[in-house]
Length: 258
Ligand SMILES: NC(=O)c1ccc[n+]([C@@H]2O[C@H](COP(=O)([O-])OP(=O)(O)OC[C@H]3O[C@@H](n4cnc5c(N)ncnc54)[C@H](O)[C@@H]3O)[C@@H](O)[C@H]2O)c1
Image 1: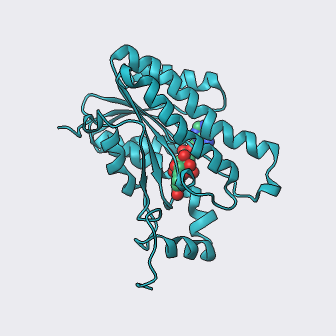
Image 2 (image 1 turned 45 degrees about the vertical axis):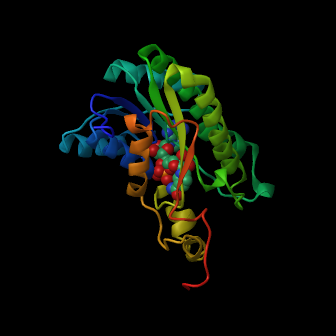
């Protein structure tokens, strides 16, 4: 029961993507009613159809999170559709892999907008609802760039490191509102975001796999157990943490097995 989400309501952005859709399906299976946000309505409808076929409850709320107003409206629409908001996972994210010399103002602003500004204002709006209801859980999404500088990921890395930091600030400010805020930091996960840019490129694929002790890509399903834990009553005294789920990438490496 400690890990059940029965009776809970959850908003997951990026729910048409590889990781967000897996989280949405897992949370619905655990009993939550889930609001699915993303930019592609038709993909959200496919995720919703799988959830419904499995006996779960969900609503589809497509929107581009490109303004503070859009973030506030999405939270308001979730509350109106589901009757509340107990869990927020701002999972929408984008990347443009470039060396620093080639990053344009548009690259900088666009990545910042989706990966950081929308996360900040979604959390702000969700907190108001959660505080009034007596508590809630927020799970932000980080990355290996919370811990390591990685080539071609300067702006993306800034957004993820800042997300990890603001997770701690929110955890501190909102602890007495019974709102726990944690960050899940996935390792290298095979999704549309990494299909071409990492796993579809033999050199980059080999670079990654040679550094992950598990010697395999992560899959979205590898993240669901940790996410469920951090959004369940089992984590009521866990806040401000960043949990890496990375097949051992950050832990180290060994030459003895290769
Ligand atoms: N795949 C990985 O290896 C990996 C590793 C670490 C962190 N992450 C993070 O996990 C999250 C999900 O990544 P993914 O691999 O599933 O990516 P994905 O490309 O499969 O999905 C991205 C999602 O974000 C949504 N999105 C993009 N721009 C949006 C906007 N303006 N408004 C609303 N939604 C928008 C898309 O609709 C899509 O649903 C991202 O925050 C990403 O940075 C991914």
